Amino acid sequence: MNNENKILNLLKKNPYITTKEVEETGISRRFLSFLVEKNKIKRLSRGVYSLPDELKDEYFIINSKSKYAVFSNLTALYFHGLCDRIPIKYDVTVKNDYSGSLQKNRDINLYYVKKEHINLGLFNTKTNYGNQVRVYDIERSICDIIKNKNKLDLELFNKAIRGYYYSKDKNTSKLYAYAKKLAIYDKVRKTFEVLT
Image 1 (cartoon, rainbow, N blue to C red):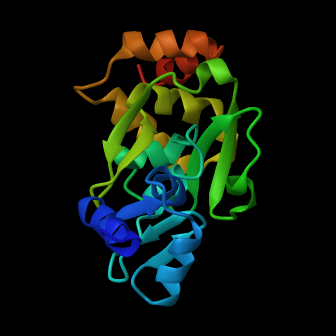
Image 2: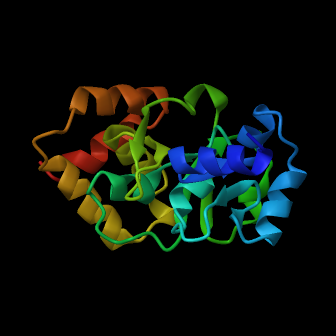
């Protein structure tokens, strides 16, 4: 099987491929540029490719920029149904020492955390296009919006807090355990005391 067919077969199994995945099969990254010139594939972003008719999944593309990039704050709450506004800017959390292409993207609000907290509440979910991305769970996301309240739209903040408070699925023990680890226990407690 020639290189073109190998790459096209990869794209039949998964709608997106990365330069790294192609190089892992032993094919030079230059071959991707060749296929783009022939209109066999299209470049969606640096290092991310798809078939020409594939729709662009911004969540997947952003997540593929760093193995430590995690959707957080209101963007994570959008995935959980606690924020009904489609993100115009994506909230993404990275490690404190991150330096990469996400810092130059004006459509992203970057939040930085200590490396020991980057995986706290982390799980994988699927986008509307069926691609897997890293997102924080509801409790971590609630902690994050309380911590970053002054950077967020107050109406969206209040709606998410009330939505969580009245949810049957909330896990307050997990919420307060996260709050202690993130050193915001008092802020979280005071936020919910107002609703009781």
